[in-house]
Image: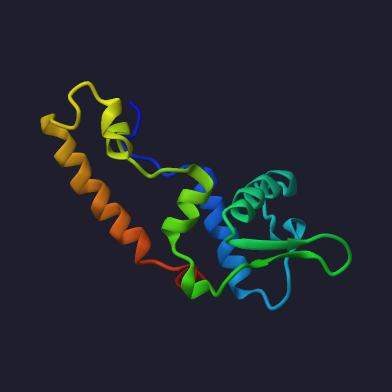
Length: 133
């Protein structure tokens, strides 16, 4: 049986990486941040998503690596989830009502909307700074 809700490994790994960046005094390379079973190549893919979302900045070459783009207290877990996975909508109609044949008028939409609001509220209330403690 499949689990009802599951956080992707990519999101988990992105949060671990962000926590490491939050405590680093200098820029970190993916090689420095990679720990078993994470490869540097895989972590580089995760870092690219975080960089595209402007959560981290990177510099190549000697003295290069990644840093947080803004203070850790200003980056939420929701920011990281959205950067890595995109929309957090539990069902498509919570993103775009028009994708549903019932046009948002079904009985279950309210349930998923309530759950999504609680999840969003929780993830928006946790910062990367709190991961670094």
